[in-house]
Amino acid sequence: MSASIMKIMATVLLAVAIVNASNVTPLSIKLSLTDTEGEMQVTWFTLDSPSSPCVQFDNKGFNPSDVTGNIITGSTVEFNEKLWSGYTSVATISPLASQQTYYYAVGNKETGVWSELYNFTTSTFPNTNSQVTPFSFVTYGDMGAVVDNSTVRNIVRSLDQFQFVLHVGDIAYADLQDGDEGKYGNQTVWNEFLEEITPISATIPYMTCPGNHDIFDGDNSNYQNTFMMPKGSDDGDWYSFDYNGVHFVGISSETDYSPSSDQITWLTNELQTYRKSNPDGWLIVFAHRPLYCTSTFGWCKSNDKDRMKFIASLEDLFYKYNVNFFIGGHSHEYERMLPVYKSQVYGSNANPQATVYVVIGTGGCQEGLNSGFQPQPVYSSGVRLLETGYAKVSFLDSDHMQWQFIQDQTDTVLDSVVIGRGQW
Image (cartoon, rainbow, N blue to C red; front, side, top):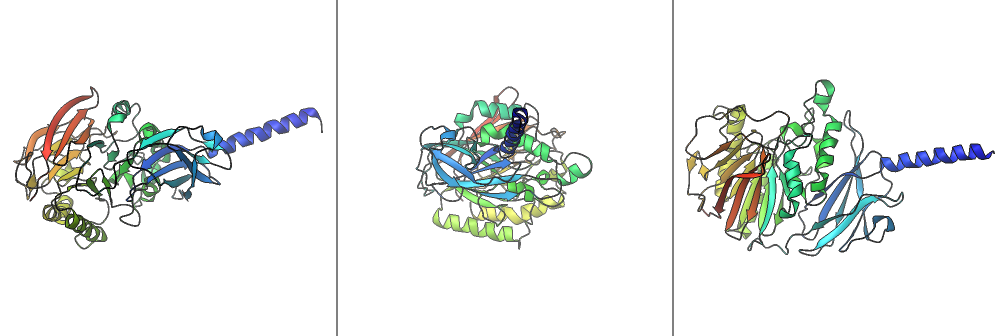
């Protein structure tokens, strides 16, 4: 064989190796909390199925290519819905120590293809929900894959202020196209959003709940294969987790929420069990759709039958089990309520005697903001804004939580309130 032919063959083999390596390059890396202390889950996307998906981690920095970190083998699920392809790998990093920074990289041990090195810091545990260790998280809904999203940019710049993200549904708006791409979801748009948030999601846990724009042709398996939340349900549509003495419960407004449904049965047991062991702990519930909102958007109108059913299934439970705070999106506005039950004010922000509700559908999606508000009801605090932005939620101590709405274009606080841990 001539030298020239051998050179060509070597070039071809190198090209094939490069292509194969690029097809298992980790993309859209995301951390998420589990329902077990001392764990952190990490997921990542690849075009091809990796032969040996795994994560390296250590409590000090390392070079991923040297493979000197602790190795944990992961598993892989395939995107096999219509028009979608690729694979999500998932691994759970453990055991982890409380309030410790860890470094990690994900990849494929056999091929030697690794992500860059990232790091995260664990929460405070053991967690008894009797004492809050101060922390902050960032929350928003209805974001979408928007070029140079100012909300994402501001959060990245302030990332060291936050311990995790709560994205309350309508993730990427991958269903706005015409034809099959709208019906089944545009994976390119979906992945573009995931790449945009990677500087956030690879550093702090990115917790979610499904919105109506995350379900394609009546199927939310692509959402479930992307965002692997703790398993309150088999598919993770509803779940709970603890962080530094606060209990969070995520539910799905896009799944059956009738009083006899599996979801409401689970939620009733979850709230009852928590309150039995933690009668005075903080309890936060989140979902995509809000119970209370006053914009001119259809869901928020008083004659919307679906919202009335949502309220009928949830509000009495929230009141019975002292749910302190509810976060929703769906309506593209910002709105904060006073403590409210049956459309009447109970207590005050300093001493709530019912659940405080907020709407944070302000992530800046392609659909834009709502057109206006209805006449202001008695339970509205007066703070109603048609602005894009996000909320910073800070637990100051065991009795006080600060809520701030930050407008994203100017990074300015437009609403701020301290809310007490009411008991009723």
